[in-house]
Length: 115
Image 1: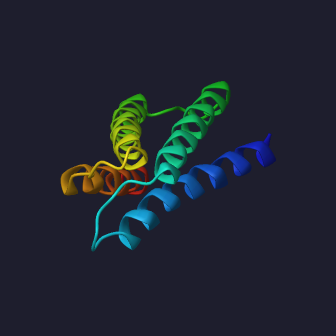
Image 2: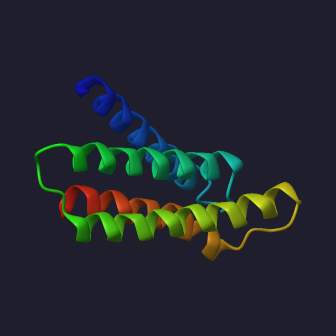
Image 3: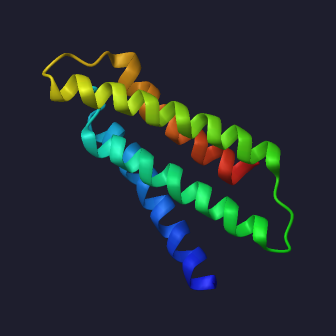
């Protein structure tokens, strides 16, 4: 079970890194890529699986932190979905939407490490 948990944590971090890394890379011309949407789904799903694994264990789970992180992750996924659809259709992606995806993902990472 330790290997599975470690693998899920790795995938969770990779998803967050893709979102934030792409956001930083496209900072001069903000946009949302389909990769950011897929990475947001990866982080969301692996995060839920990690919570499920920890619920089965003996360590207590901070449900308030999980709820905050879940709400932020859903906001990232929804914003990334809207942005990548606009990108695929050739429509402009607003700067605010692009920064909402990357900035919210960064805030979610801060909540994970600082709370």
